[in-house]
Amino acid sequence: MAWITKNTAHEPIERRDEPFLTDAMKTKLEADVLPRFPTKRAALLPTLHEIQHTYGWIPPQALDEAATFLDIAPAEVLDTATFYEEYYLKPKGRHLIQICQSIACELCGHENLLDKCIEKLGIEHGETTEDGRYTLVALECLGACGGAPAVLLNETLYECVTWEHLEAEIDALK
Amino acid sequence: MTLENPILLKRIPTPPWGDVKDRQVVTYDQYVATGGYVGLRKALEAQPAELVDLVKESQLRGRGGAGFSCGMKWSFMPPPDGEPRYLAVNADESEPGTFKDRLLMECDPHILLEGIAICMHTCQLDTAYIYIRGEYHLQAKVLEQAIAEAYANNIFGENSICGKINDRTPNCYVHRGAGAYICGEETALLESLEGKRGWPRVKPPFPAVAGAFGRPTVINNVETLACLGPIVEHGAGWFKTMGRASTMGENVPGSYGPKLFGMSGHLNRPGVYEEHLGIKMSELIENHCGGMRNGKKFKSAIPGGVSMGFLTPDQYDAELDFDIGRRYGVLGLGTAGVIVMDEDTSIVSMTRNIVRFFARESCGQCTPCREGSGWLYQMLCRIERGEGAFKDIDLMDELARSMGAMPGTTICGLADGTNWAVKTAIEKFRHEFEALCKPTLVQVSVNA
Image (cartoon, rainbow over all chains, first blue to last red; front, side, top):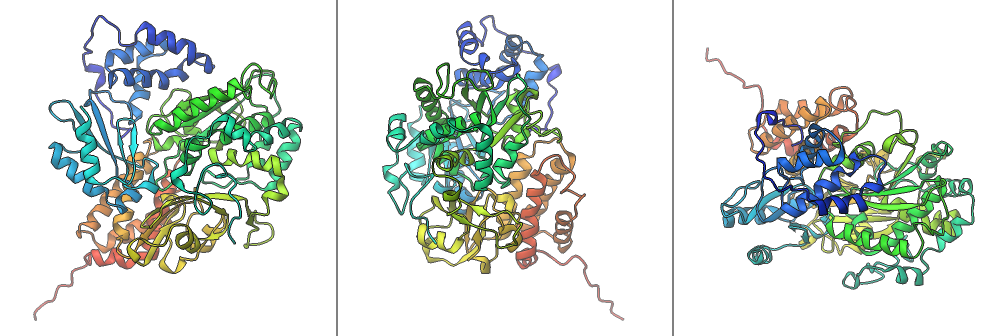
């Protein structure tokens, strides 16, 4: 939930020498994204998407680098990054299994999928398996109600999912 | 009254005209070969003011949920003053039960781009941002590809057939959200576009005066924009042959044009169907969706996304138009994403599901919504477990009905939507809640 605050001010930031927001990424953003907007801050969501897409999550150091890149305060980056569910500020599994739990999917049996997933992976929703392979998320409406129950595996949507189908897809993710 | 030919789904195979298995992305060439961009070319011959009048005359109402007159919205825009003006396309389709815009963007992206170009010309907007929800990965890619085609064919860009708009090169970009329902609220969308958290703004100023980056901005839904090409091409009179006038009085705005209905829930063939506004829900369920799943009886439906509230079993024949709210005691037509429930459905559980959605998606800005939705969720969970009390039902009902408790105290409509679901559930299915609750007052017998 968006409004839960964390005591981030006192958390030490682990740093590495090599930047997360690489020069190649910056060049790409400067060429394609920044000219779209009258302010630099407007490029924050695309920048965070780029970082998350590359590393699977957004490390604190990357937030800092995004702030420098866009000439805004780190607090402003944190403010935005913590608001959106899609941004992971802690490492997540290599593969993201997102099961829709909204009304149409509940009507069409999402609970069975979720329970079986929990049983198979041995984790609750919101958690990551110990080997770092899967993160399981029960999320709100995927906008695929006509194909309920719907599951988003990484960036691919599956509709009218049965457990046999989903299990096979999960196993195929290395 | 059934639609003779598909309008918005002209190129997207959909029963009864086609088979969903034949769906594929319509390319620029295919779009043009089937009469695409004719509306835009016709629009470019007209003056912007004429086009605003045309859209006003067509009585096109916003397809994003509120049903506000599109022409009226455009007429609020101040005259150009030399500075930038924006179009924000609301493709943040996140209301549970709604998946119609996804189909348009996934299969026929150019119908949206044509609408965007017409809107940009009409309102003199130089830049368009398509704000698409983060979960729509495939749709964002399809749109990017279609926009590249549109630039290559001079719909947008330096050599655009629109020429200079607002003395600038017309541009169109995809902007991906990151998983927040609230960003579908128009001012939250603008905040998010500016790189901030999606907190709705206090209005006024309205976006037409100070929208994205403090500049005049038009915000339209995907389906609304998709209606523009056909309206310009065939005229307002043609558009008004579909749908119907209001039955609520002469001065009430009508419900004209075709509409995409997203049918989901306990149906044999759920999916997006196109029909006249004002079609009976029973017709959609029986003729288009192949009836109720497993031959069960109809119990309830939510007419347009979960914030609209529940219909009762005897409202099975409800006509789906913009007057539905006044006729059947729900909030309105919303996005026309109809969620159908059969006789075995627990309304208490569905209400709990809906309220959980709002509790999770509340942006946290206004206290009554942030706290209220969470407490409502806890109460509903308690009732569902069989641990609730009658006074819980009364308290929820009172909260939902009292303007100034939770509804009416917040910046945006999220809290109102939450309470419409709760209010209609209790009003229409009170017995289900009561059946799960214990009486509050325990009568103590005194042995004399």
